[in-house]
Length: 332
Ligand code: SAM
Ligand code: DTB
Ligand code: SF4
Image (cartoon, rainbow, N blue to C red; front, side):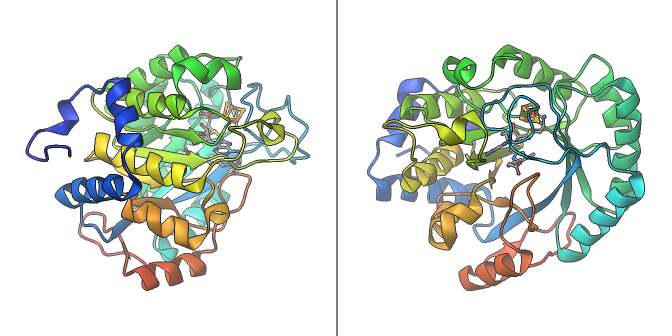
């Protein structure tokens, strides 16, 4: 059992140690994860973030899971950058529904300086509503993170997505090192890091453990860790995969949440894409395993998410409540 008196945040994790956590009997793993969770968080509070796709489709990158790559024929309708008023309206609705953070996502390899000007305006306006702000815009060039910070950006989402050894199987148009470079720029600018990955892309358990090890060994650890289950979007290469690892055992997803919780004890671990597919019972296991954040609202970027009403009902059944930000109590 992990010694809770030790500062786990400063511990460097080896692959063998992370694999050993994965290999625990399920009940032992859940007990350990729940113990770590309780030592660091209100066990019944869940942070609520709402997502908005501010620029959809037509992306130059070839990420094998993504509906928005111009290289995959997914039938997705492209949309150019949304105007400011549309974004503000969506943010107001998210706040009224109980979200405390508003995350704006763009299907870019990285923002052009001209586009960044429009995004900084969005960040300023959303921030002025009293919401935490997050953007995910792809790779940043020097100076861009500082512009976002000046506009009031709280979080930048940029996922490692998978372990370095598997990265080239999923994405070839940019590298794992490119991702680390942008993460370093975000940190340097003083913006909180939101960084996680995807489970269920046909990777082995060793690769899953490698992803979590790499996330847990970031210094400082990411404040927010989204764990996505692959959403199989027809037309993407990964939706068509077959073979022994193609269909993920849902308990393996729950284990991944638990291992993330144990290795990143003071991070918010977000149960992210794939909630509709997991169903309520498996989601409840994920909360027990230490997930304490979700995307709240009926859309992710291009795919569905549970309706806010269904989430409120689930939270009520489980006795969960929305996490307060700056002393405010939220929906649920
Ligand atoms: N273009 C930017 C980038 O790649 O960083 C930001 C948007 S991108 C859609 C954000 C994240 O969404 C990806 O890093 C990936 O983790 C997640 N994602 C995209 N498609 C997904 C899918 N089909 N299933 C699960 N997660 C997905
Ligand atoms: C993250 O890790 N997951 C979110 C957010 N960061 C931007 C995106 C999930 C996308 C799921 C597929 C889609 O809706 O297109
Ligand atoms: Fe583009 Fe991001 Fe999708 Fe990759 S994950 S294709 S970079 S939008």
